[in-house]
Amino acid sequence: MANILLTGASRGIGAATRSLLTTSGHTVIGQSTSGDDGLLATDFAEPRAADALWEAALAAANGRIDVLVNNAGVFEAVDIAGSQDDFAATWARSHAINLQSAADLCRHAVLHFRAHGGGRIINVASRAGHRGDSPAHWHYAAAKGGMLALTKTIARGYALENILAFAITPGFTMTGMAEEYLASRGGDKLLADIPLGRVADAEEVAETIRWLAQDAPASLTGATLDINGASYVR
Ligand SMILES: NC(=O)c1ccc[n+]([C@@H]2O[C@H](COP(=O)([O-])OP(=O)(O)OC[C@H]3O[C@@H](n4cnc5c(N)ncnc54)[C@H](OP(=O)(O)O)[C@@H]3O)[C@@H](O)[C@H]2O)c1
Image 1 (spheres, protein in one colour):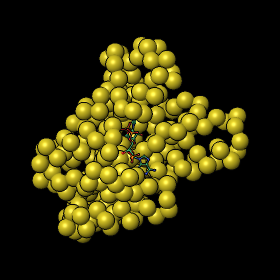
Image 2: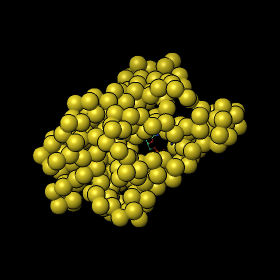
Image 3: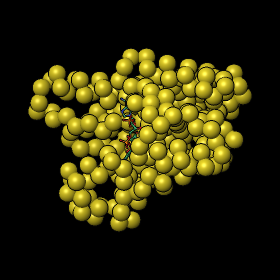
C-alpha cells in the first residue's frame, strides 16, 4: 500500500479521493488551507508554500512518499473590462495555486522518486485545459493547459527511472465549485451539452485517481484521461 500526498483533500473531488484511497488501504497525507480534520495546512497563494508542504508531508509519511496527487485548485472569475490590477492579481493567484504549486510539488516528488526507485504523479487538470473556458476564466484554462504540458514533460523525462505521470481532465463535476458554476450558467442549458445527460460526480473522478495511483500499467505514463460524459471528445 502506498503513501500518498493529496492536495485539496478537504472538499469536493479531493474529499472523495481521500475517502476512497483510505478505504483502499493507502496512507493519505492530505492538505487544505485550514488544516482541519487531520490535514496539513497550506495556502498555495503564499510564496514557497509547496516547499514547506512537501517537507511536512515527508515527515508525516516517515520519509517515503510513493504517489503525489495535485488536486487543489481555484476557479475565480475576473471581468476583462474591470481594472488591470484585478486582471493581473487574478492571473497571479490562479497561476500560484493552480499551476506553480503543482510544479513545485512535482519537482520535489521527482527528486524524491529518483532516490527511491520511482513513484507516480497524478495531476488534476480540467477539460478547460483542452477546450478553453468562459471569458472570465482565461487564467484557469491557461493554468490547466500548463498542467497538461507539465505532466507530459515529466512522463517523457523520467519514465526510465520508473517515475510515471498522468493527468486527468474532468468536465463539470458536482462539487461546491461546480454547483456555483452551473447555477451561474443556467444549469439545464449546460447539461444539454453533455451527451451523458449529467455532470460527473466526485466519486467517479476519485475512482479514476485511485486506479491511476494503484493499478494503471506503466505504459500509460504521459496519458491524459478525460472524465466529461463525452461533452468534449478529442
Ligand atoms: N468541480 C469541477 O467541475 C471541476 C472540473 C474540472 C476540474 N476540476 C479541478 O478539480 C480539482 C478539485 O476541484 P473541486 O471542484 O473538488 O474543488 P473544491 O471543492 O473547490 O475544493 C478545492 C480544494 O482546493 C483547496 N484549495 C483552495 N484554495 C487553496 C489554496 N489557496 N491553497 C491550497 N489549497 C487550496 C481547498 O481547500 P479549502 O477547503 O481549505 O479551501 C479544497 O480542498 C481542482 O483542481 C479543479 O480545478 C474541477
